Length: 68
Image (cartoon, rainbow, N blue to C red; front, side):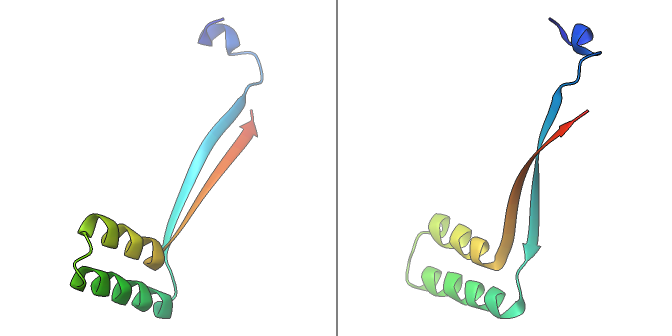
């Protein structure tokens, strides 16, 4: 069946929502300080920066399915 033939059927719609927000100020300061300390201790930037970003940012990934 092609898409035109499926037009009349009810098929589930699947999607992903990614929400990114800054955390509260104390946690953001701790993440920034930790990332800066890691860079100062010669940790590769490819490891230190994403780790600090995950501490500073609140990342929520949500999968949803909706019937149409």
